[in-house]
Image 1 (cartoon, rainbow, N blue to C red):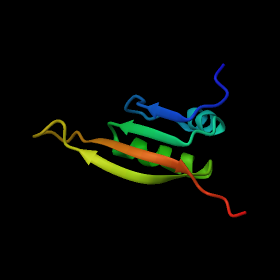
Image 2: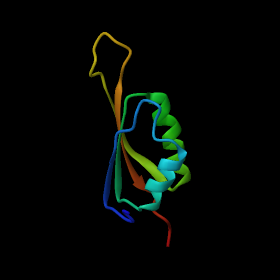
Image 3: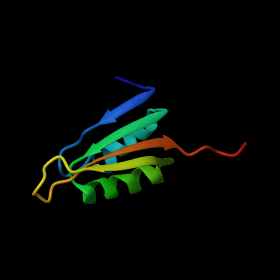
Length: 85
């Protein structure tokens, strides 16, 4: 029932959000989207879907929260691409 919002915090499962979820989130027109990811490959796929929907990466940080393992957490902040008037 949510039709618009200002900020979205997204923390999907390891497989990522997927194209349909991203499409719905883009339709809400949020000013910023904070995407927390535990799989960089799934994040990359979803970032491509967000780019198709008119969002770009403003910042991207990786965190080694599990030392001595291959697991890396990433946080991407997305914003809508400004359209020229």
